[in-house]
Amino acid sequence: MRGFRGNISLKKIIWTIVCLICLITVGILQVISGRIKKGLTHEQVASTWDSDGGYAQISVYLSESEKLSMLSDLETQEYLVLELYYNLLSDLEEASITVGEEASESARLLVYGYSSQGSITMESDRTTVTFNAYGVGGDFFLFHPLKLKYGSYFSGDDVMQDVVIIDEEAAWQLFGSSDVVGKYIYIQDIPHKIVGVYERDSGYMNDAAGNGESTVYVSKESLYLYGTDNGLQTIEFLLPNPVSGYALNLVTDALSSRDVSIVENSNRYDLENLVAVLKEFGTRSMGLSGVIFPYWENIARGYEDILAGILFMQVLILSFVLIVEVIILWRAWLRRKWRTRDIITGIGDFVYEGSANRRKKKNEKLGIEENPFVLLTFDEDEYEESEEQGALFYDEEADVEENDTVYDEEVNEEEDDTVYDGEVNEEENDTVYDEEADGEEDDTVYDREVNEETYDGQNDIVC
Image (cartoon, rainbow, N blue to C red; front, side):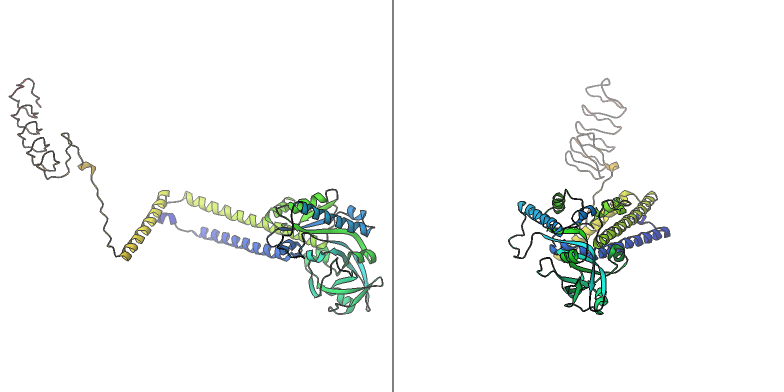
């Protein structure tokens, strides 16, 4: 096995270190990727709702043409949301999909939320400021949790819809303080109660996505009646997904006649989807769908590109490591001083030694003295087969019994024995190898003398 191990050159050590650095880099990129995914809370509602993966979060983004068709009528916008909700609920019930008997009374099979983007002007005792605004309804904040510093959320089911959630920057502008929950601001002379103050996200990606300025959240009704409403932009659903793609197909079929963009957020950062993002590289940012996305979807799409880029780098680095290792192994194979049988022999020796050691320990434990192994060998040159009656010769000692094997140059004096001696066997029908003649009848002689008995000189065998 010494030849198998070989000597490790400096070049091999350098390349090994390079490969280790590459593998560490891949690990670091994987950690970064995991932290990015964990921070994208707007796309993790399904896993929070059902950790077993039985639900899916589906987002529907309406095109500009769809928004314009309903822009002038609030009831039409809300009717579209409710119609879609009840159609999906009916489809789930027809498929015998329920919340289950063990669920609580408050458990819901289908959850929805929706929003519009626009702007709104708020007035306080100090000042009047116009803010970016989202008019929301349903369970919007279930899908898009904010970092609340004070107060709580509101929902579309609340009786009182004249409420507002503002960020810390807006609170300072309006009141000179951030702890302003319970105070009122005026929107076109209509008082609205501040029910929450949140910390707005910051950073390059957040600012580039359209969330770089102070933003407030009001009810969909307040934005439509008292602000500038750009039309219904987003509808989101949280619904059962018994098999992969079921929820997405259900929503897609329900909106087949609408010009919309539908996204399943539950698995959008999986390997398969990130590979699909890489395939769309170069065309993904062209905006051919006619949809203007809200800031959270812009952030999600931006991080999709980043995660796809990280995946590409990992594949590239691992490919480099693989190629280097293949080259090293191939060159080692060409220069090897060992053979396959060396490895097999080494493995066999290792297994045998291990078995012998285990047997020895077992015998010692049982108090059994181990017997030495006896190895029997013989030389082919010492093995001969007798031409007379199958006698075998291995030794120099002779057996005097009948038809025995003899190993000596002495003569076996019994009948029908085979001899290798210079003496003559005087019994009948023996084979002799001497120069003397046998005087008995029917003997074979190997001498120049003739047998004087029955055959006279004519039929005797003479050598």
